[in-house]
Image (tube, rainbow, N blue to C red; front, side, top):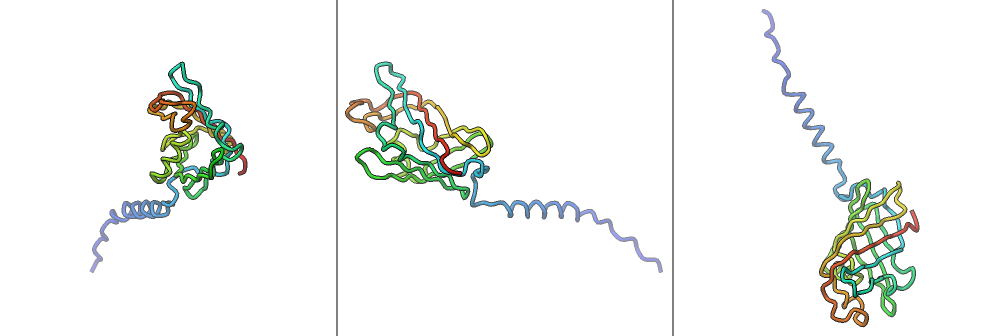
Length: 179
């Protein structure tokens, strides 16, 4: 008696493709949503942080002038965390936890907690900001962007009395200190 023909194996190839796709997804590092953090990982020193108000009768706010020289550092870790630390003149050390995300040409830094947002506002930085870079690894992180509702009086009460809601251009630059 002849053997009946075997049924075609149609379902196995698509099933194999689905299984391979699922394996690739589960192998992704979900603890590091930052993308290309290896390109920006390292410690940077704050070289420029200034706010140029749109109003012509106000002078540029140079944030570096109110910080201890060399105290402002940004460290980006490959595990998806970053730390910005700075010390105001006649003040204590401030530590700000940030969550970095990187692409090939920019890194976005976002405050982790509300308290971190407040610390950033103290030096006129928004709760989330993006900085461009070139080179691999990046040697300079920099950006310039429009800001509104900036409370200059909270930044420097003597110099900017009654200047609680200002628009202008914020410029920031960090330079690499260590890899």
